[in-house]
Image 1 (cartoon, helix red, strand yellow):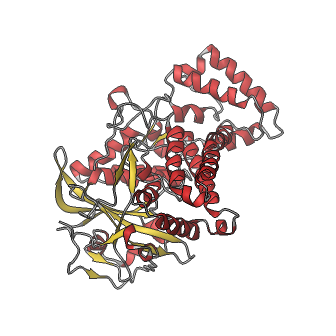
Image 2: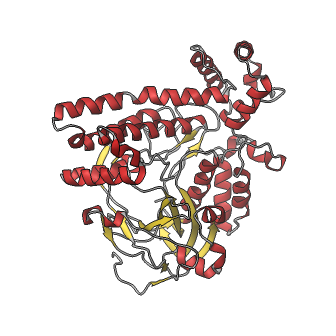
Image 3: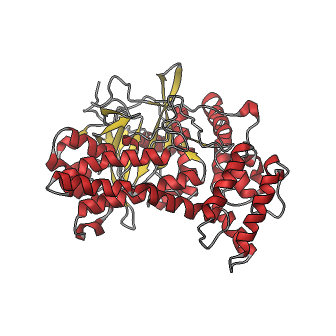
Length: 496
């Protein structure tokens, strides 16, 4: 049952909320106004004080009980305007009309600097979009999103972030009974490719223009003066997504479910479901338990991003040109540029990972030769790159292969053709090759301790290690060790 009326009381906003809910001023077809469903006994699992301070919020002014009530949705900020957003999505290639089936957007908070961020409760109960779901979330997936999104932020990769996770005091049924939780997600916005697909799916061309104008005004105001603002919007989103997916690849991140409803118009990473980081390098790696054919494997992520963006371009056709044939030509030109844009971003990042300040045409062969060696030896992706910037190479097999020794000599010759010193190259490499990633077995270890024993200390220590992932901190050296065969995580689960 959808909860639309309640005795939920607002807070006095003393922590510093400043809501201006522009999305709720769009046509009513874009969302449904409703309240979160109250929970029985909320308890704070984790609060992100650093994020709160960057938002201009003083969470320390709240008692633990007050914070739990707030981030469970039992108590609302005075100026909140809770809504469930409508959107659609191509899920593994199949189009479905969707929407926030277990999330409520409280509103848009303005920071003291004037930045605008969505504040959303995930796991907040049923909505009209729940489709027989219970609208709730399990604790482990919410903690996973918290950990991985904080790691992505530390890697300087555009991402939504998590302000809090609270347990609800209620159990939810999945394959077994699990502890329930609600996550507070912070995002530049929750507008997705699927948002445009939803409006296009209703046949509302004026609605598409309204949404596109809103996105330009909110995210890309400079585009309003372009000769063709809607084509400029398409090109800008293509650029943002090409850069984003390249950054994923550079740290070995696999999203897991790159459906069109999980691709933001702002260019942020969103929806950390069955996501993971590669240990041994293999471009065919898949972690999602539901991706049986490798649609969203590591190597396919650029192709899937381009496919999703083609769906976005289709929704914009009426705006790109009054003559459909010309609109299609413009859209195809934009979409066909994606591989080159992505390759440029990826190659630029790979050069940094190898300490290269200059560009040579043979760099791509140098990079691909190293990746081939890593794949043949099942070498650890993160540690192999990090090791190249050390004084002495490790004793692992890949570094003693005759082919690698030849590659290493070729790389050293390439470095010598730069005016920058070797030390400068090593510094560049250390700045772009993390020492620590949230390795799957360590994440699972932290989640198990929290959900099975109520022990959050492994998670807090992992988060502390990930705060500065490019530093060599002896205290956290254990996080650099790849999993033993018995510790390897081959599948991750959405947990919805």
